[in-house]
Image 1 (tube, helix red, strand yellow):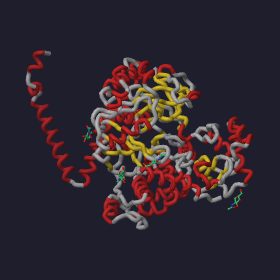
Image 2 (cartoon, helix red, strand yellow):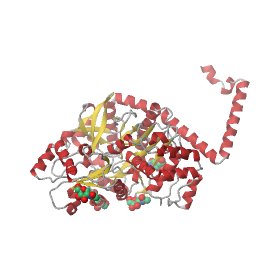
Image 3 (cartoon, protein in one colour):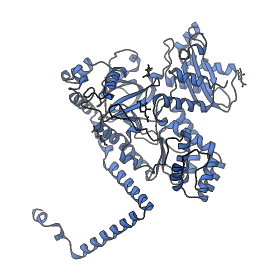
Image 4 (spheres, protein in one colour):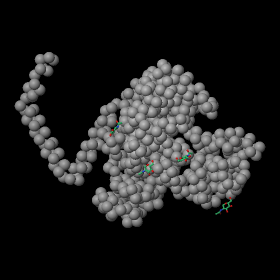
Length: 606
Ligand SMILES: *[C@@H]1O[C@H](CO)[C@@H](O)[C@H](O)[C@H]1NC(C)=O
Ligand SMILES: *[C@@H]1O[C@H](CO)[C@@H](O)[C@H](O)[C@H]1NC(C)=O
Ligand SMILES: *[C@@H]1O[C@H](CO)[C@@H](O)[C@H](O)[C@H]1NC(C)=O
Ligand SMILES: *[C@@H]1O[C@H](CO)[C@@H](O)[C@H](O)[C@H]1NC(C)=O
């Protein structure tokens, strides 16, 4: 070995090999030059190269293998993560105030640090955004991640560059690897429906990025099909119409993606309404003149289009056959539809699965929020999303659900939870949130090595509770579905509900009760008797509700019919109120914000 390695490298090469190498290098170099020189095509080629490189980088990371090892050693990794986090933050203002130096182990931390809520951090965050340093994290956070709060206001959490890239590796990279391994060739053509995130900064220039868009990084961008030009003056409808046009013209898409399932539902409703215009646009290689797009942007868009009569004819034939399973027929190579599951997203997911996306797996790859990545879903073909908790991502604690109404209940660690039990999640992340009650309730379904596998159940913030009856988001949804099944011919398209108190005088001065708003397909109107079925079902499912109804301290449910469009207006309002892009909004199911309640109230049809 010693002898050979001391020889210069070229001594190994015979003259013939050298000749071949030089020839190859020269050929490749001239091809490269030719392609680059060739303008537009060169660009396409470069972006293909970038895509290929990104996939290579992402799949080389072998994050899946790391996860495998981590889950075998979950308890130890969790303990180390917590102690490292406390050590790293001990000289921040928060760390000094809470004597982080005194915490020697998990137990002393749990004993001496209370469970927290968002409000406990509000003041620190306010001061951070105004430029004060060393409050929750050492120095300044790299970005502030904004997401809609439950009451309409937006909440912001700090994030460092380091945890941002860790999240991407542990979340996105595992997702890509999983898709890559489950659906060979699926990452060839990934199309994402999305709105460009606004560029905004805090008073002192800390970038504010919306969740979940904050989780995408440059190398991820290369995996998607090239972005479709947009102009800030374009409406949501116009942006999505244009993106649909580009997605439709490509018969070879292998994955379609959006932040949340509801957005895909919206995209396909535009398809159903506008397919004739879209097909004509593809045929003529233009963008419909009905869209109010500024000239410059229109030109950019149309430069990317060429007339394609045969694709147009193909699509027309498919649309004329109807929309059941249309996604598979439009894109025969499509292997999987990807979006994040969020609270209250069951209905959108189910609606897609039953009709438009019939026959294609719907995959929610990660369980995450602005505050961190919690789990990854390793089973893209399963109907129910389940996530392996990532031990290296945040420190987890679990509150058994029957004590979750207490202010400071005892918590369990990851190794102490049991399968089939239901818990409220508590996390400590690396970005300054400690023993933080997320408000998510999950069910542990099994274990992956030592790590719990969880199913998301509901958001505590969406619980209905006018007299202490506490009906959860998923409990209410189940009761509503049972009721809709009793209305002949009716299909549920959308819904939301609220406690009468939110509407104040508008809902009449009677006993507190629920106001429920539904959009249905297949029925024109409902009789009083049919509407009352919802109240009966709630009584059957929830004994406490029944007893309050019996005593008369809760009034009967009032059910209203409204149109599917009114729910879109609701999301638009939520987007305006929180100053976040529409596709960063998760549909509220229980409205707590007066303005939103009034908006839906005004759109009641009967
Ligand atoms: C975070 O990364 C961005 C570039 O990705 C860089 O501009 C910025 O300075 C970094 N911030 C910190 C605090 O390191
Ligand atoms: C939302 O924010 C506004 C202004 O910052 C504030 O006045 C209001 O109290 C907030 N509402 C809630 C429910 O936090
Ligand atoms: C930036 O944020 C401020 C307040 O945080 C808001 O008033 C403004 O509209 C935002 N700008 C954009 C472009 O979103
Ligand atoms: C729908 O039914 C309700 C009774 O449940 C009735 O009061 C209302 O007038 C009906 N509306 C229409 C448009 O038929």
